[in-house]
Amino acid sequence: MSILAQLKVLIVDDTSTSRMLIRDGLEQLGIRNIGFAADGEQALKMMMSAPSHLVISDFNMPKLDGLQLLQAIRSYKPTASVPFIMLTGKGDAAVLTRGKALGLNNYLTKPIDMAALRKAIEGVVGRLK
Image 1 (cartoon, helix red, strand yellow):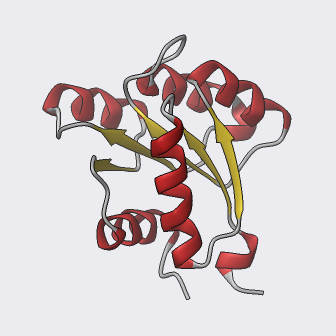
Image 2 (cartoon, rainbow, N blue to C red; image 1 turned 30 degrees about the vertical axis):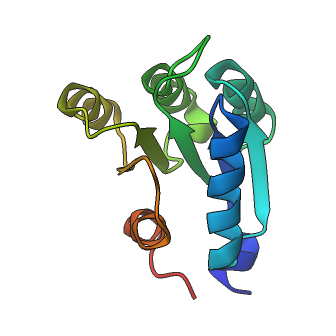
Image 3 (cartoon, rainbow, N blue to C red; image 1 turned 60 degrees about the vertical axis):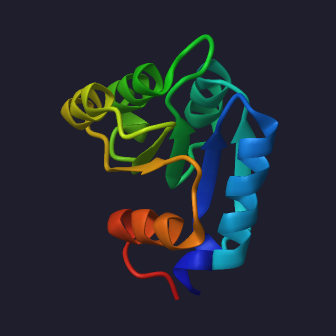
């Protein structure tokens, strides 16, 4: 079974348009097992009850921002090693530095294009086939 058929991805973004654009990109790559959370708090609950294999999360969200979500995921033993890709509106150096200190695996800047999405995911999970 291919990695694409097995990979369960959680998209976390407070903007439904962004969630759908990322979903469309994942589907174009062949990824079909996709979950959604509208904020970091909802995502954390989902990760604690049924962890995904990869989290793609916006940084700027209510309740828990992307860095707070990353920190919570890293501090919960069953999800501590789940790959995490952060979405930012711009390549904010301070956010990325803090993220890397917390174990951020990769990042994407908005707007996202297909080549960047594929590259970010392959940088974390390996070549997609």
